[in-house]
Image (cartoon, rainbow, N blue to C red):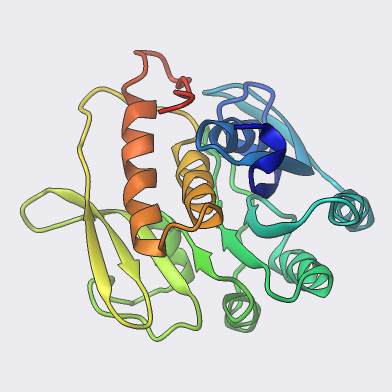
Length: 250
């Protein structure tokens, strides 16, 4: 297939020099999942797969300039959002994207903490969160991020939220670990494997990017989440280091 017949998918995310997480991981995932990856840098970090040193946020105007020139040329219907300076900035960028394409679907991976322990955000207000949830299509928090976003909620009970929510890493009473996909119609359990002794830097980025890729190629949300789970399993098992390999054409 010629690359220019592929769907264009955009990542707005931070730059991780190790390539394990952030925009580089997103682009690798997009390409492996048979869509064409475009990228807008929201932050520049100094880190590797196990040490986080520093972060510099990209000014909002520069983020918008990067976005606009891409939309001037390419048809973009799906966007994956990673780290952004704050929820107010995130909402501003989301509304800017929608001004360029009113039907765009946005998948937000609400990163609160880097693998190495650095916290990107400490303050969450209900008003900010509510405004964002009304504008995005899907959010993909892990269990810790979900607890911060939705304190006191029982995650096995259906959320009354304006968007779909995929909560990853939920541990059941039998000690198995599943993902929970909340839509307006159902709560779907997505089974997965556990890999004792194996972990990878950037699995959350890879998962949300794989879901975005599936949606862009016309797969349903439920099947996109299942296929993304399989892709992440291969990513985790690709080698014994903390940096995973992307399996192109799989």
